[in-house]
Length: 118
Image (cartoon, rainbow, N blue to C red):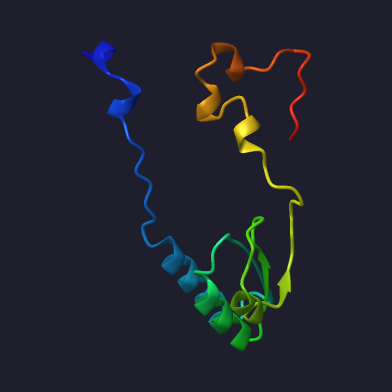
């Protein structure tokens, strides 16, 4: 019965299905066709480096927003610039809709007096 189900009966399984490869192919295609002169990549990892190298060889300006992640010197070598779109890291744990806050029935909706920091 549904009433017998508990939170421990469920697991979240998130896997990437070739996203990095598809992005790399898109970047290579844009560079090879001369369709862009600048690419701004928003990524917290360095899986994009081969694509960035290819784009830069084709004359494309490659800029990275690392999403508050620290980047290595080797990543720095393969980008033309660093840009931070959002200066502060999000406060996900403070969000009333975060899974850790949903156990409190009143946490999901802020009161009229409460102002959301977006």
